[in-house]
Amino acid sequence: MTERIVIVGGGTGGSVLANDLADRLEPELDAGDVEVTLVNDGPEQVYKPVWLYVPFGQREPADGRRRLDELVDGAVDLRIDRVTDIDTEAKRLGLADGPSMSYDYLVVATGSTLEPEQIPGLAEGGHDYYSESGATELREELLSFTEGELVLSVIGTPHMCPAAPLEFVFMADDWFRQRGLREDVDITYTYPIQRVHGNPHIAEWAKPIMAERDINVETFFNAESVDPEAGAITSMEGTELDYDLLVTIPPHAGVDLIEEAGLGDDGWVDVDKHTLEAEAAENVYALGDTADTGVPNAGSVAHYQAGVVGQRLASEIRGRPPTATYDGKTLCFIETGMDAASFVEFDYETPPSPAPPSEKLHWSKLAYNESYWLTARGLL
Amino acid sequence: MTAIEPDETVDARGAACPGPLMDLIGAIRSADSGAVIRLLSDSEQSLTDVPEWAEEAGNELLEIEEHDDHTAFYVEKA
Figure 1 (cartoon, rainbow over the protein chains, first blue to last red):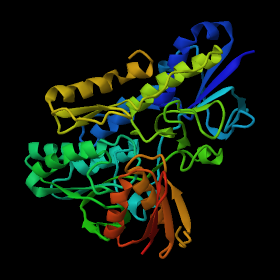
Figure 2 (cartoon, one colour; figure 1 turned 90 degrees about the horizontal axis):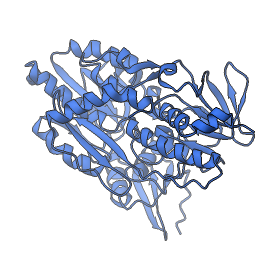
Figure 3 (spheres, rainbow over the protein chains, first blue to last red; figure 1 turned 180 degrees about the horizontal axis):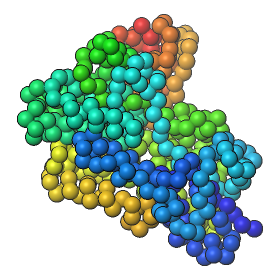
Figure 4 (tube, helix red, strand yellow; figure 1 turned 45 degrees about the vertical axis):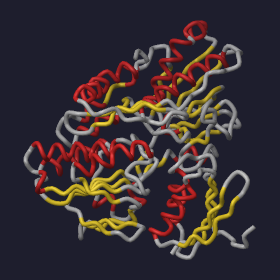
C-alpha cells in the first residue's frame, strides 16, 4: 500500500522538506511505496527577506519569487490549490478546486499572514515591508522622504524575522546619513516590552548602537490606534507619537484552518518543540512559523526543522522509531547599516552573542540571500 | 487561593519570555474595561515583566498567586 505524505505550504519549510524527502526516500518513491505531495495556493514561492531591501531601492520584489515547479524535485507531486479544511480524525484535506485528499502523514507549513485591521487606522496610516505590496508602496514614500519624523513601530509579536525591525532602523539611519539628510530626519523605534528586542541578549547588544546612532527608543509601546489624518500613533500605555512616515510590523497570525482543525490558537500549531509533532493530532507535524516552538519565525528555523521532520518521516515510513529532534537552532544575519552586518547563532540552550558588525558579514548576508534558492532546492 | 473570578484565563505555561507578557497584552487589548485577565506563566521573567507593564499601562495587578510549577497573575484592565 502506498503511504502518502502531504505537505501544506510551499514556503521555505515546505519546499526544503519536499526536496529532502525526494532525496531521502528515493527508493520508496521509485517503488511506489510512498507519495510526497506538496500543496501550495500559488505557483510561486516567495522569499520574504528580499523585502527589507525593496524600500531602499536595492532589490526588486521579483528577486524574491521563483516558480515552485522549478524548485521542487520532479518526484514530488506538486498541487496548486488551496487547502480549505483539515480533518485529522479522517486524515483528509478539503481543497478549494480539486477533490479532497487523504494523507497518512501531514506537515503543516502555512506560515504567517498579516492582520493590520486589528489596529484601527493602521491599514490606512501605516506602511510595512512585510508584504510585497507593502514594500513597494513604502519604497515610493521612502525614496522621496527628505525630512520629518520616521516612526518604526513593532506591533505584532511573534512576527516574521525578529531582527528585521532593528535592521530597518539601522539601515535607514545609515542611508539618510550617506545622503546628507540624517539631520533633517528623526527616527523613533517602538517595541512592545521593556527592551528593544524580545531576546535580552540581542536587546542588550542593540540598545547602545541605537543610542550612538541617535535612534529614539520607546519601549512598552503597544499600538492601540493610528490616526492617519493627524499623523499620530497612540499606545495602550497612553503614549502618542507624531509621525510623517509610519512603518510598522503589523499584527501577525497563522491561517484560520489551523484553529478550525483544533490544532492550536491564532493559526499556530501547538507542537512538541523537539519532535515538532502536533499535540492535538496523530501523524501531524508543523514547520517554521506555523510551529509554536517559541523560537524566531525565520527561514533558517524552517530550514533546520525541515531536516528534522524529513528524518522523522523517513523513519516512520521505514517502520523505525524516529529519533531526530530539533534543538532550537537559529541563524540570523542582522544588517547594522547599508554596508555592515552582525550575525547570531543560538538554540534552546545557548543564547545568542552577536558578532561585531563588519562589511564581510554584510556581504555574507547578501550572498546567502542570492544562494537561498539552492536551499529551497535542497542543495545547500 | 484567591477569591478573584477572572473573565478570561491566558495559559502561557511553557512559553519563553516575552511570550507570556505578549499573550497578556493581547488579551487585555481585546478585553473590555474592568475585565480581569488571569495569566498563567512558568517563566521567571514574568515576575518582573508583568508588574512593570501593568504599572506602565495603568492596569491594576490585583494579585500574584504562586503555585508549585507556575504563577498566576490577575490583571484588571483600566
